[in-house]
Length: 167
Image (cartoon, rainbow, N blue to C red; front, side, top):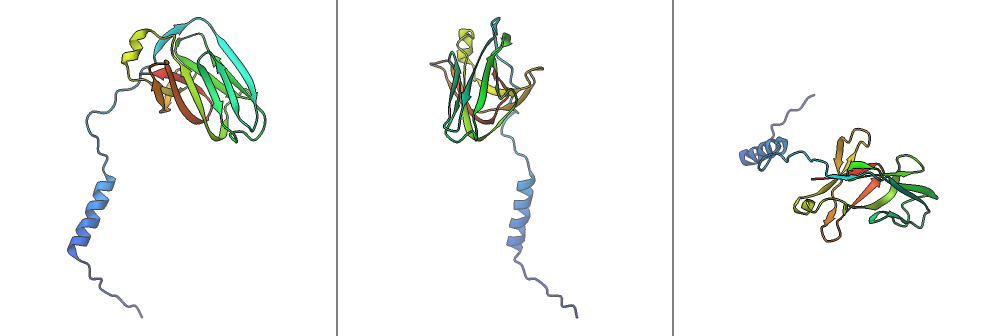
């Protein structure tokens, strides 16, 4: 035997629920959408690279003011970390582990030194992006902190790839 019961609901509760569903499905924007980022042009004709063997205790690989800092526990075994600052028209770096892309157990900190860029870059709002190193296509804004005094931009990540300064 099927029993049907009529649910008694208050009109205000129904209206509030419907309004909540409507608002949650909307995509609100305050102001115009952000402009696409542009890679910072900071030419260099010199290719620089270094590497270091880092273990479970962590460590740092650095080249000039650019560095990769791995905390304790980021790695499960000894790993070769390679840092490359290619000859390029852009302020970009490449970071690999054991010659390829890599994912860490804990976030690492990468600091990109942009002191080779022209002084007018100081007036710009900067960001660092994960890029495709071959096409320079912007993939992901990495967030982070821009230190205008030292001309360095630091961010954290769980993976290694190519990165470039943008505005």
